[in-house]
Amino acid sequence: MALNTSLPVLIVDDYQTMLRIIRNLLKQIGFNDVDEAKDGSEALGKLKEKKYGLVISDWNMAPMTGFELLQQVRADAELGSLPFIMITAEAKTENVVAAKQAGVNNYIVKPFNADTLRSKIAAVLGE
View (cartoon, rainbow, N blue to C red):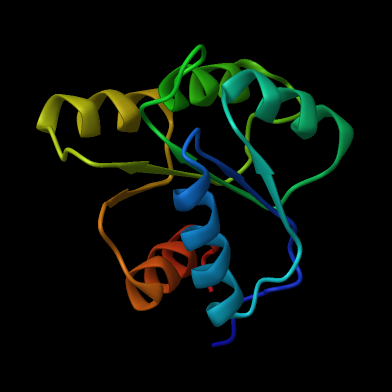
């Protein structure tokens, strides 16, 4: 089945190069409505202004981490059910468990390619 690639996606990473890589991968998959935020606080601001269909966030950021962003999103009545994918460089079991408990929908370990990203998104969006 085809992914609904018309959904707006918010990507969050404090590393400009990574934002560009993820944006390019999303474009390959067919997502063109992609916004960027450089940390969790900026992301929260954007999430309040626009309705996104998916958040893809890096774990390690300052001042607000992707994990803290996830917790804030899940605690918010309006954003609570927003599909959220976490990206991390280290696949530490305790991180995966913590993210799962906090309500993350899926998890991607760097480095990854368009196919991996597509299958993770498909799993989350249920298509």
